[in-house]
Image 1 (cartoon, rainbow, N blue to C red):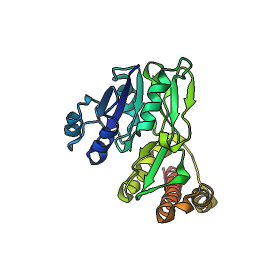
Image 2: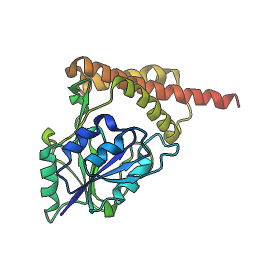
Image 3: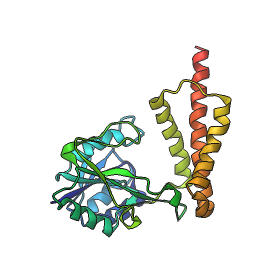
Image 4: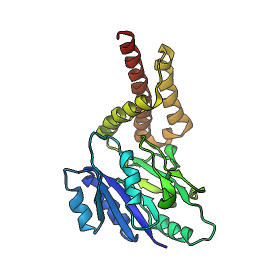
Length: 252
């Protein structure tokens, strides 16, 4: 039973070598590149990756390339890894052992250990992602943050952090850029028509309180506070864009 690691990339050279080093013992590493202009592909070639290309066009998210990528793998079993994540040896061993069992599921949710400013943000754990699957039974929607659709059974990894994907996390600058992209995509997907003044005030406030106090980011020091503030800001930016669209429609 063999496993392919599938990595989608676009100008991902900053952390790609660390990611590839962590998955070098899998049977195949497939890099699906969206026409990078940096040295992403040079790094992939150094590690002997199988490389396929998905046209970037005007896409600002990775999901349109996901389905193409997983079905370009040579092996039925695929582990989807982002170019800023690392796979622990414990996770790799667990997956190989898992597919040898006669009663395994067709896909698995894997938990993710999110890092930010050098700290593990424990309040975001387990941040479960459907990343391991039999690609012959999977299809991936093109919408942002979508999970693959599995024609079969889906299981969950143990919550022990040693089995988690380690996500390097965004820098502050990248976090700000991503908030704009993600809120644009949410705006297109959710179709919310209006927003009240109370929502503008209290929805971001509640998001901060939940993330910082209830989810436990308060235990992660300054990094936890900044991450919680970003979470509240993302909610505010989304609602502000809803209001902008609401006002624009009134003046058509």
